[in-house]
Image 1 (spheres, rainbow, N blue to C red):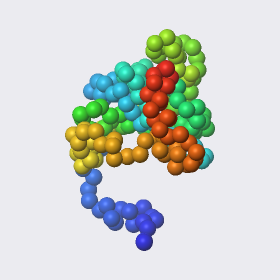
Image 2: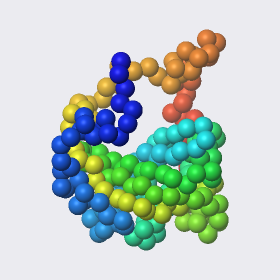
Image 3: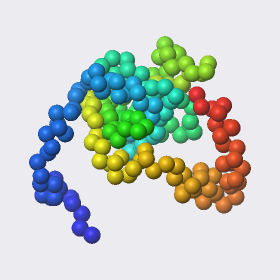
Image 4: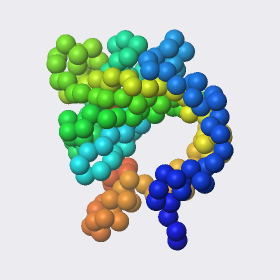
Amino acid sequence: MKFIETLRDLETVYDAEIVPAALTKVADHLTPLYRTWVEAARFCILTTVGPEGTDGSPRGDDGPVVRVLDARTLALPDWRGNNRIDSLRNIVRDGRVSLMFMVPGSNNVVRVNGTARLTADPEMTERFEQRGKHPRSVIIVEIGEVYYQCAKALMRSGLWVRGDESARVPTAGQMNREMDAGFDAETYDRTYPDRAKGRMW
């Protein structure tokens, strides 16, 4: 297999003109319509980079997944998880981040690229109170650019229209058992929803 290893080779493969809208859609801050989109999103993917490589982490909430602090600043709470804190370690060492916001039913995606810092300041964490709980920290994202991604990827995948396909994939318990033959996959999968309810926030 021959790999593309230089920008010149890459540009030879992609020799068409850039679609003009792909450039005009980019803003360096949240415009009113981009703000509407971001505030409607309950789910996003946070991508970070660190010495060990990249990391992509799903983030979700039952309201807006981020808070808009101003047109150039977003706040993303770090709710309880598995305590690996891979994304947070990366942010402390390298602030470059990307966020990809998705809204069920829409084939467009809004992307934010920027830089991030962490805070555990109570004044900020208390702003995210959910059911009497607060995040341990909050990711503050300074927006470098924001733009929508064209709809073709979600249209091709039929992500929102093909229904529940989860029966086709292994469960979390089964994947754990693949790594540890003694793992009780059935009990893990059966009890996880109840265990997770107390650890959602």
